[in-house]
Image 1 (cartoon, helix red, strand yellow):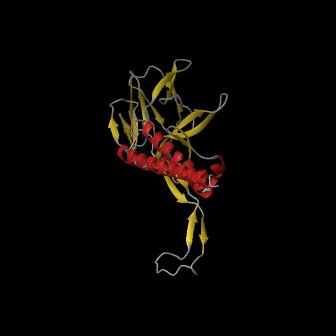
Image 2: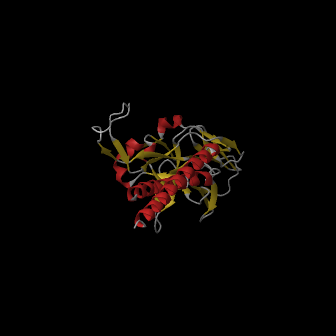
Image 3: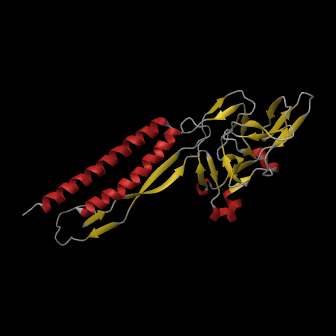
Length: 276
């Protein structure tokens, strides 16, 4: 009975992580640029009991008894499929039309420090700074980086914005002048190697920084022709609500089954201990 309780407890802990993953997907179903996470399970080790000498029945399955100890969460993968593009007709709303391409964002990291992270959340704004200039930021107030990895500043008397197909942001002024800014855009080569930081932000794990060139490519020069980007639109989350709800119901039923197994094992132990 103790073994039954241990097996069920092992699986319960892993099912809770799956439910947390599904809940996070549902909570971010309306988050711009969010990519759904998918949990996959794998079995833990089996113990083999060989009793084929006493078992004379004809069977197609292997002889003996295989006793498992539960399941574990094998991997939580990110679904990088393209989300629906919704038109907003706003100059600073930008949406990628190709998968695995990300904006470069400078996230605060400690006192006066920043960390380069990547996001597909393209609803940008301008934030006033010193000397009559403004800085291009995202919805969280983090600085948007240009192709050299620096924050983007420009004079505040702008009129409107434009965008070319290769990711060049044009800042138009009333006097007819246009300031061209090359947005920092990166394409992931090994997306599953990236580290989830928070919300829609991902980054390179510290132990993979020396292999950065194999994990991602900064789209610069002639490579910018590969960029797929659209102005006046936002990419919606790629969360499939019907799929998530189906998986949530399945996970909850499995959770209830494991809980019931623990209850039954506890009752059996009570009966055994009560025997006089």
